[in-house]
Length: 184
Image (cartoon, rainbow, N blue to C red; front, top):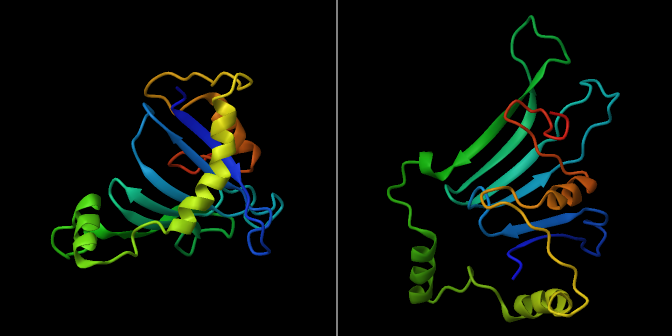
């Protein structure tokens, strides 16, 4: 039974035309997390600041809920030159706010059910659209013509083919210093 998937989807509208939406999910990988990462287009290589990492807006759903904007910022000080920039985060970490105890995810959902709030739940039309997209794929994967899934070691990031697919769409993983892992 396959326990890992990476897929690239595109929305068919003017605003999101040509923007890949990359979904990646798996079991027994190196970290358990839910993260939405919007990676902005890379600046041209001959721009004022040279070859630099892409800016990102990151929404960490779990664990440790947070929203942060990872961007390039000019190095402060009078002696710094125009091309001297560094990665920095504009961070909204809810745990750092003094709001008391934050409820666990399911605790909040149960509370919303009791209160009659439906805004955190999927609507019927969303469920139907999800099945419209994924049901043909699932039927193909269960057929005799389905390819064998790529294997990956337990505790890894998943199969190498997943990273290759993601990189083919222009997405780059960066180290803490801002160096692309494909260049390191």
